[in-house]
Image (cartoon, rainbow, N blue to C red; front, side):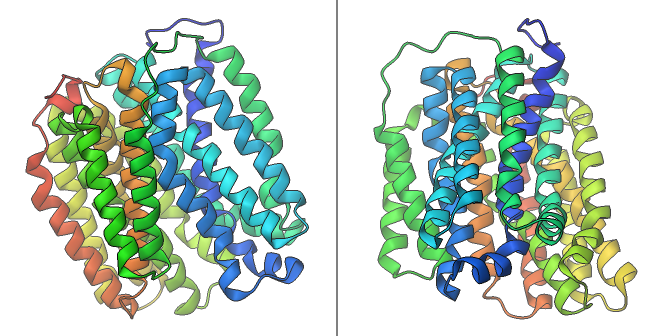
Amino acid sequence: MPRTAGPFLPLLLPLVCAGQFMVILDAAIVNVALPAIRADLGFTSAGLAWVVDAYLLTLAGCMLLGGRLADVIGHRRALVAGLLLFAAASLVAGLAGHAGVLVGARAVQGLGAALLAPATLAVINTAFPAGAARARALGSWSAAGGVGGMAGALTGGALTTGLSWRWVFLINVPIGAALLAAAFVALPRGTPVRRRLDLLGPLTATAGLALTIYGVIRGGPAWTIAAGLVLLAGFAVADRRLFARRTTTVAGGLLLLFGALSIALWYFSALLLQTVHGYSALEAGLGQTPAAVLFVVVAGRAPALLPRTGPRVLVAAGALGFGAGFLWLALGDGGYGTAVLGPTLLVAAGIGLTFPTLMAAATAGVPPADAGTAGGLASTASQAGASIGLAVLATAGPFDRVFLIAAGLGVLLGLLSPLLPRRAAAQGERQA
């Protein structure tokens, strides 16, 4: 049971899971609506990409700042503020009559999500006791994000076809209002940490991530990536207290690699279904549904194994699923069942084993005063890995080459898994 008490405590876990679902959903839901948005608002080809990139860049770049703010102003206030900002920006995006207004609203959406995502993780890490209860909560939170990613194509296709592309954004308004009401009821008020808001580290990291991800995604000049890496190194020095925890640092690094593997499945298998097998966007989403369901099941059950096995075993097993599944995708031939369904199920099982395990390891033993920052660091690593991985893999060429590279990354993840602690992440012990 959670350590906190409240009149409607059963709402706590569904609330934070729904918040994470919204954050990930909006990274994917807009993709199928892009042609309609372009026709209605007169976007250029280059400008249309910013409808996606504006959200992803601000989300990945500002999550560390959002996590630090959550530790200072309180996790409840941060979650409520994130929901308000996200819902308000969604309303502006849905009513936008100009391309620039929509891109700006998407950037503000990303800011709201960057405050909301680490706050949901911080609530779990402070409200649920270390061990099995927290592991189960993290499993549910991880599964909710996975469902959000997979529901994006289906929901976006249905809303765009049945109503209008505007409802891809407007749907967030009533959902956000419902979650705000639940937040005021379910979340304990708590007391903000009375300490100085040190912005040097988070702002340095935000600028470093923005420059690095922009340079990779948009193919910018080399100096942007170099400057971004220098700023990230400066952040590590400025916030060395957080990086002094070996488990947090190792798990964060592995989450970078995991993010690239995860996006390799969902993004490129959707393209494979549409360009090779001739599926529509909606059919491709349905074709990915079995893998999404398996991911949810495995992510929900993996935390029960974590206290007994420790993180090394589960990450190594997940890496085996990555390697075998992506190799099958690269070499497979035939119809949907043999060329897509079988291998994507293997990779989805690997994601379900790996993601909640690495999130638990990254936040294990972190004091409550740093829970938001640690959650922001872990979420940032996964999101940045996905953004950079997508940009790099998209240049790899044919699908078989993309999946072979992903298989190699899966093997690398397995080889690095012994760097994780044997049992500390499962038990929530403090690591230095």
